[in-house]
Amino acid sequence: MRFLSYEIDGVGGLAVDTGGGEYRGLLASADAFPGTLDDIVRSGDFAGAAARLKSGAPVDPATAAHRPPLTRAGKILCVGLNYMDHAAESAMQAPDFPTVFVRFNTGLVGHGAPLIRPKVSDKFDYEGEMVAVIGKSGREIAEADALDHIAGYSVFNDGSIRDFQLRTPQWTIGKNFDGTGGFGPVFVAADELPAGGAGLHIETRLNGAVMQSASTADLIFDVKKLVSLISIAMTLEVGDIIVTGTPSGVGAARKPPVFMKPGDVCEVEIECIGTLRNPVVAQAG
Image 1 (cartoon, helix red, strand yellow):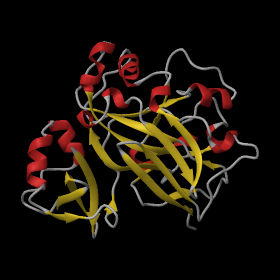
Image 2 (tube, rainbow, N blue to C red):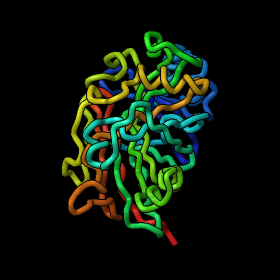
Image 3 (cartoon, rainbow, N blue to C red):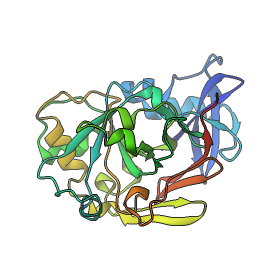
């Protein structure tokens, strides 16, 4: 199943793919509304939610105002340096344990919404990544059981303010400027994709030019390993998000560097999931 979070006149809604890319949905104001995708992931009742949503009105993904698929993740756990070529272009050693940093919900925007380059920097970089959403809580999860804890997948653009990211050994500030993280366009249930989202082509395009092109098969730590290793430390809770890492080709590593600027359009496409597209604008004021 595929779900799309959207809004009309500020009222949130949820739609489901009824087949062939045709979506039907309900707004939160409707009596039959099954809840947000955050609610449904937590309940696990995807089939019940889909049945209700199919009674709703048609929703055109091409014209809908998208929201991020989930907006209330308890933890957004991002993994750095998780492709060998990206570690090399960053002049960093490939890690022997996942390099984890966090993002927060306040920095995320949906498909079609603008990514905001802040006034304080012109070093706004793209990072196309696959998202795995936790659907079953657990701690100290065995790798063999890890995929049982994944509800589904989506697409992410881990927009990074590079000069702020690299001012300290911790990357948190540079990864959390408001409006810099793209998330969407849809949530795809795990059973629609290869196990662990493995072997999917991932591509980032800036104004139509291919900047990143790789396969999720190239992850140093695949989804199974990430779930198992991260859960050594913490309980992974339903609705948590793991952003699995970006391949080589980021703007900061290019010679000369290529950063996103107002007027640009950045797209991240992952095979069998979809294309996340965001224009870039300057921070107002």
